[in-house]
Amino acid sequence: MSNPDQIQRILFDELDIRGVVTGLRQTCADCFENHDYPVLIQQVLGEMLAAVSLLSSNLKFDGRLILQAQGQGNVRVLMAECNHRNEMRAIARFDGELPEHASFAELLPKGQVVLTIEPEQGNRYQGIVPLEGESLAKCLESYFISSEQLPTQVHLASDGESAAGLLLQVLPAKGTGKEDWERISYLGATLKSEELLQLDNETLLFRLFHEEKCRLYEPDPVQFRCTCSRERSAASLKMMDKAELLEVIEERGQIDVNCQFCNAHYPFDLTDVEALFAEGSAGSQSEQLH
Image (cartoon, rainbow, N blue to C red; front, side):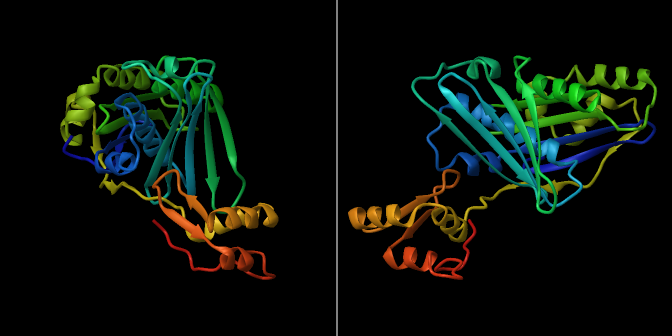
């Protein structure tokens, strides 16, 4: 992959079809750095990161897109998110032993995928994606067909260290010929996972669509960035009972709030807690982003 940590849109000059390709390397490394994940979890989270990168490319507002998978097996939660600035983070929660190899559906028995769109201004939207396919890509394809009636093809690949994705989709409210989509989706279906991970975007585009009039937009960078802060941690503590917080401080000397995504550490002592519950207080220290 010679186009890591960026996303590029594909323009088909004569077709009402859009395309997006993404590659993630350092982003994956940064997301996994503070977690001792097995390779299987890193592979699945890599696919989820590639997926939210592709899906967020169509956001028309400031906000974030969250993809969360839950099941009734050892893997409890898998989550990846991306905002309009292409800043990403991900996390996994699981118990016990995991198999060395397993499909997405096998990891999440009786599970579902939830797609959430959270604009900074406006209403939150949430859609449920049933686990009707063996892979995350197939689940997302089914979601677009059932919820938005948009023929869509999704390719996701991850080796635990890098991840990549390709999305092809009919543009809404265009209604171009069915034959165009059948041709493009047929060509897209020939893509192999190793090609998606190893080929640069120009080579990939030529290999798939050299008989079509299409081109790549300028790339946009993608990176890991956690949105945790001391201010947000303080806000979560303020939702708790003050007496309970004071009991914890009496026992331990302070309250430690740790970010599950980046392992940032925010300590709060007695003075901090008193300030939190003082009238008009917004927290004892200024916001610090990581």
